[in-house]
Each structure stands twice: as structure tokens, then as C-alpha cells.
Length: 284
Image 1 (cartoon, rainbow, N blue to C red):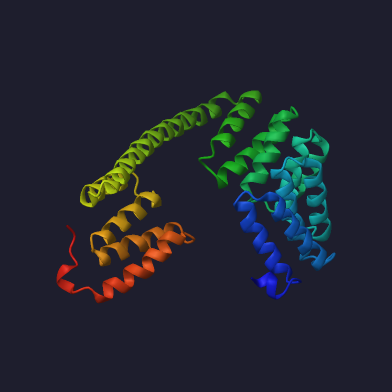
Image 2 (cartoon, helix red, strand yellow):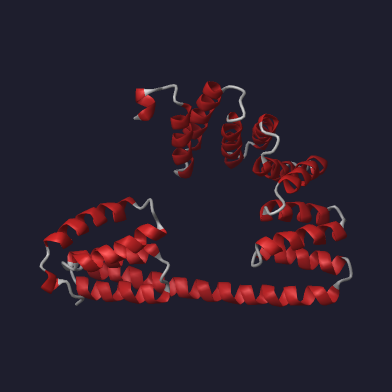
């Protein structure tokens, strides 16, 4: 609508492209970014548009075009650390190790606390046979992302290659712990999903109270599952427990602010809760 009112509003083209890209509509996303770049010209602000255009090209497996856009981004904004990092990552994919090293060293120099850039540079040094340099950057990456398994794995390899076997042992132990936690999380997630599915079927059959119990059990296993919480909240509303529904919907929107279904339900639930006598605002 904004573009209809003002076709030359570059910011609207950029924002629309982001939504389209998130929806998987990459070609129209790229077209809107091209239009934004045309409108903005060769300015520092255009660096962000070129950066996004590169991301879209990358998702379309057009690596050379992505590299060209990243290069344009850092040309317009030489201190654009994220663009330097992604340029290095893309150059590595195209087997340009020297170019990748140059870009990643620039990224790390500009933003030392960027865990991804530090990891990428450390991994590249490791592949290049420079294990000592790899250890330095991988340790730095780990200090910002202590549970990143890829960083842990590559640091363990780098330490072994430099003969630091004793220092590598606790990292191997930590990797095993994280793997166990991941396996446990997968089991819990699968069980919670099963309970949620049972709740959906019960609700379809008209047994909302039984469905509510299933959704509640799913939440007990995975309290962060906003999909489970949304189903739980909607079931509360269908039972006329509007105030309780509002509480749960508020939590859904905290976890997922852009959830349109939750926002719509929140509006209805609030209106119904206002009109509901206090003596019926009880859980079943």
C-alpha cells in the first residue's frame, strides 16, 4: 500500500523485500531490492540494500552475483563488518581462499566480538594448515558463543593439530554433553508434539476440555513451544475462560510478536473478558 501511494519510497521496497524473502518469494524480493538500489543511488545507505540483495542471490545459489553485491556494499560502507564477514563466507564457497581470508580478517578487525566472523576465520586458517592461528580465532569465537558445536569441534581439531591434547579433552567432553542435551531435547519435543496433535484431534471431535488437558501436558514438556501455548489459549477461550486466555495469549505474543492468529485472538479475548462476570473467571 505504501508503494502504491509512493512508488519511489525506497524504504518500503526494502521492507517489502524482507517479507517476501522470508516467505520464500525470492524473485520478487530481488526485484524490490533492485528498485530500492536504483532509487537510493551510490550512497552509504545503499550498502544495506546491496547487502540484502547479496543475501537473496545467495539463497538462489547465484554465488558470483552475491559476491558482487557484497563487494558493492563494502565499497559504499568500508566499515560494514557483517558484509565483510558474509563476503568472506561466500568467497570460501567459491574456493577463493585468499579472497575469503582477506575479507574475514577485515571483518574480525572491524568487529572482534562477532562470533560468526571469528569462527569463519578460524575454520579457514585450520583448513589452510595454520592451526595455531585457528586456535586463537576459534577460542575467541567460543568466548562469545560457548555452546556452538561447530566452533567446539573445529577448536578441538585445531588443538589436536598443535599438540595441545590435554586442552582438547574438556572440549570433547563438552561436545558429548551438548549432544546428550540435544538428543534429550529432541525426545521431549517429539513427545510434546504428539500430545499437541492428540489435543487437535480431540478438539475436532468436540471434546475441548480433553484437548485442553493435552495442550497443557505438551506445555509441561516444552514451555517455550508457542504453538502449543496458542492452542492452549484458544481452547481456554472456546471454553469461555477469556481472562485465562488473555494471559496465555500475552505469552504467545511475547515469544512470537508477529503471530497474527494470536493478535486477532487477543483482541477478541480482551473484549470478551471485559464483559465477563468476575465469578466465572475460573479455570476448569
